[in-house]
Structures are given as structure tokens and as C-alpha cells.
Length: 283
Image 1 (cartoon, rainbow, N blue to C red):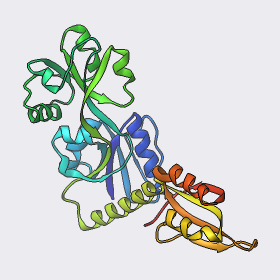
Image 2: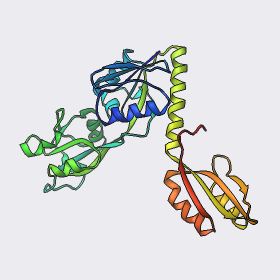
Image 3: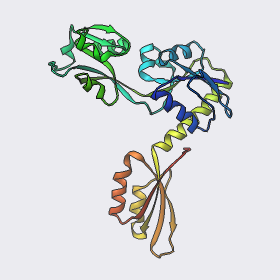
Image 4: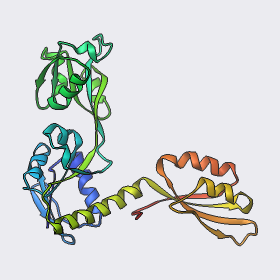
């Protein structure tokens, strides 16, 4: 059995549990339980503080973990990462009061900066030749400038609304983060096989989220152009329609390219374009 540690509450926890369920793994969870066992896969899920997860995985208390890259790197265990998961994306950014003058990161030379990520920030500043006084605090970092603790902060940013609400403006991106799957380095052969099975499922789910299934009708004269626009996994499926001179085309397109490709398909004569979500996609 594998023991997987995830954050016990919050958005990262919700997204992690959703991914596990989308992988076809069934379990019962509740707000008061600190662990649960899957019913159809050899997996036990532990609900822990996110800051504790990298250390527990490194020490072998848990075999796997899902945690933000920012937490993993700050804890000093980037080597544990085995799979980027594509959700809970955010950035670690520097911010200053809206009225403060700021030209570049060199403007922070000798200044006081409040942060919960002194390791990541320290490396960033050192890379720019900047020496600053770092004040490590946990939580409510945004209040530091208004109470005179610091002239700037470095904290996690998603939408930026919290910064604006506290009279701050974002000036530099220090680190970009997303959820990652981590694994302790001394898994047995059986556990490694289970890990690969889990990664296979996660990759299939992620691949499906990034893709759409598209069906359309096109004149036979435009088929080669449609095929060029819709390469699919290998090539599109083409079926003759009852109406002479027309075919039905089925393929897969990437979410990021969908609208651009759709407009091009219409331009070459495609009609009746249908777009469907994909639940799983095995490469």
C-alpha cells in the first residue's frame, strides 16, 4: 500500500481529492478524519499541514505527497518531485505600497522585506546582487508595510486582490508554482509499480483536461485542409456522409488552440462543429 499525504484543508486539498477521484480511486473523506483508505486501489490518504508534507515524505512517514512547488522548494526538497499536476497555480511575488517609488529589484537594496519564503526570496535577491533584511513571518504578510515592519513583502499571489485590498502593488515575480506529486526516494519495487500506475492515471486525466473532442462536417474538396488543421493523435477519423461530396471528421484539439482552429475550420467550409469534453485520454 502507498501512503499519500495531502493538505488537510483548502483549495489545494479540494483539487487533490478531485484528481484522485478522477483517477477512478474511491474513498470516503470527512472534515474530522485525518486519514482514509481507498476501497479499490492500495492507497491510504493522510491529511496533514502542507508545510509538513515534504519532510514526512523525505523521512518515509508518507510514501507520496501532493504539495505546492513553493512549499517543496522552500523546505529544501525539490529532488522529491516526480510529476507536475497542472493545478493550484500561483506565483510568489514582491509587492510594495502603491505610493512607494520602485524602479527595479535593486530598489530593495538595504530594505526590510516580510515573507514566509525566506529561502526562495533570498536566492532570488542574491541572484540580482541585492542585500535586504528578511523578516520571516507566517500569515498576514500583507499587513507588514502598514504597521511599519517592512517596506516590501514577498508572498503568494493568485488574483492579486488581497494585495490591492491592502494598498500594495505587485512589482516582481520571484517564483512560479503549481501542485506537484512527490515521492520518497526509497520506495520498494512493488511501491514503485503502484506509483507508476497512479502517475499513468493522473497523466490520462490531465491530458483529457487539456484536450477537446471535435466533430464536424466538411466538403470533400476541403478535406486536405481540414486534415492539416486537425492532425489529431495520429490523424483524424473521416467518414463519408449520405450527402455526396461531404464527409464527417472527428479529431482531438488542444484546449489552448481550440478557438483559433475553429475559426480556421469555418473559413475552409466546415459546418456543424460539435465540441465535447474528454474524460480520460490514454496516449
